[in-house]
Length: 201
Image (tube, rainbow, N blue to C red; front, side, top):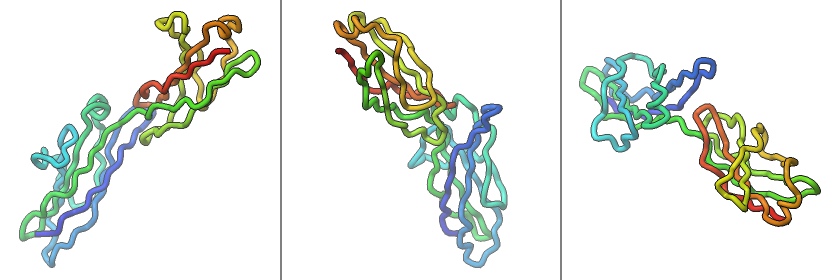
């Protein structure tokens, strides 16, 4: 029997074809003088930590790394995958390793921290949210008419965390005002909406 293995993993994406893959690597355990027979890698759908079982056998090999590809796009964006690995020598198998959970996430919601009138425009700035491994590709900026909140329009799609809205009605701005919010997007999808920013004056 061997010592327990430490498993590490990360999610990768081949952007051209939108193929997700799990990159998995583990340490070489202490075999206690008995030759290695194999490593067995197990996979479960969903976040199974601590797992009820080690999962279904995915791969048997002698190398200490494995790329699970292609992953099902819907599964990796929703339930995710859990992985564990064991090592066997001529005496027996090690206990299962720690669980590595692999899932694709959209960015966190931005924080809209500035919305102010600047002459004939409204300047907006927000933070760069955590993209969870996949870079933010763009931000969608939305504006609500405060006299009719159900009327929401997208006013911009930008690649940087700021925007100046010049398409405003100054009379309307003075009397009723506007409310803004922002979404961040990456290849996985869209974040939740940012906080609301109200501007009037």
